[in-house]
Length: 308
Ligand code: CP
Image 1 (spheres, rainbow, N blue to C red):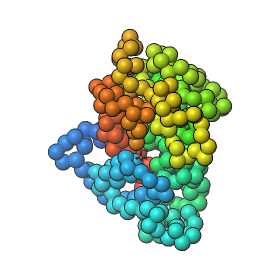
Image 2: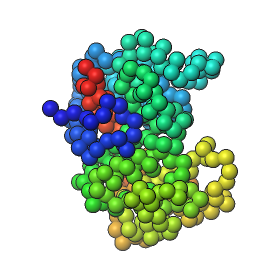
Image 3: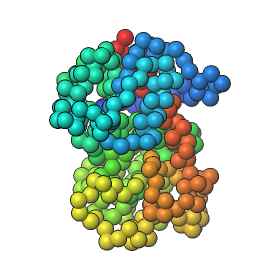
Image 4: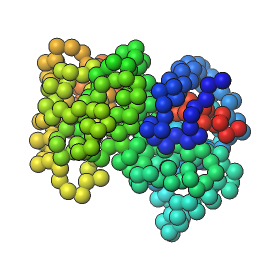
């Protein structure tokens, strides 16, 4: 029987190509399940999962919770802002207290890069990283590649450009790892100040001209400027950023082919992408969200089968 090579999902960096294929094949099955009239399977009836979020989230939190409920797991939700973390309790104490209630798996979002890796070394539970600072967001990258595979048939050989704030983006790093492992070509595009110097060592190229990047690609993954992670100004003004790195319908229509538009959300409409692009038939933004549930069901199912 096929199983994942890892006991935790801490980053795409730690997965191999076979792991990614197994997650996608398992997600295909769960996607079929969640489109039935009865959307639930009893598979994880004996599993308890804690979702602990130290940072805000809409899509990831709801998607994990729905995935867990569709698998019939028992679910507890923890939000740092309403917890004893406010009184100074440490991460390990917090999680060990949750685990003493017989929890099998922890899904965690945390502002510190490496928080999930740290936790996996100190607690006895399977850990899923739901985003750790500017480090990785593995389930986002998996659902992104899965959505490309669904729209274009395969990821291998495709040209994908990731546009925007690469420096502060965990989505960019996880996508680069995932796309490269599947044999896609990857470019990043954005202001030079928002592209880390090490990026080419990951096997991606840099293009600062958006039109050229779009002419090259099959898929453009548009990222949000993460103002909350910036303590200085990285470009002169939002207006100037939008003029150089925003995608609008006129720009899309000027290309000699139809490219696929993606965005992990939340969208800043009118900044990195206009509404007529976000809501066009070239956009697969809502398919990404829909596929997130099947991908997270697959990841949880495959990791749970390793702890039973
Ligand atoms: N894509 C993503 O991580 O969105 P949320 O921050 O809303 O979870």
